[in-house]
Length: 143
Image (cartoon, rainbow, N blue to C red; front, top):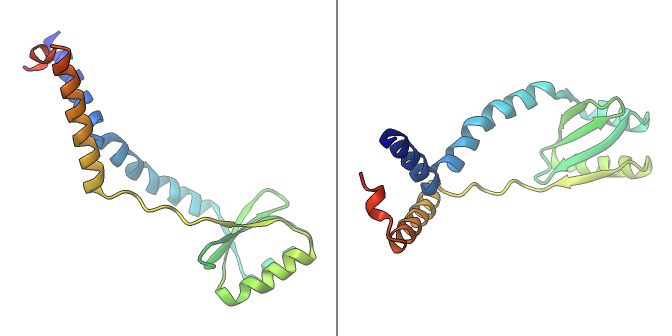
């Protein structure tokens, strides 16, 4: 029973420090992104323009920095096309002439720094300890 309580307190401390939400997404994210990028086929700009005019494109998403577009074709396959900023207006003109939907993907927000996440977790842990102390149960949790 004492060991179970100790394990519970360790898990609670790690959770209150904010370490689980900080490291779990970074451990899972690279493998998911690698799978996603392997499944996306690439097209050239000329192929994209041909497919737009042949009505084989369902939707187009422009990256905010105009480095690439993601294309969903009429078969449901996702394709990536690397572009440069000068070709974006031409593609927009092609999409408008064929009345195809398009949108701009917003940039990803920056992840909070490790120091900020640690400070948040530390303050949260202190608040939990203060609440436990205020309820008079701190002596029960000290091993």
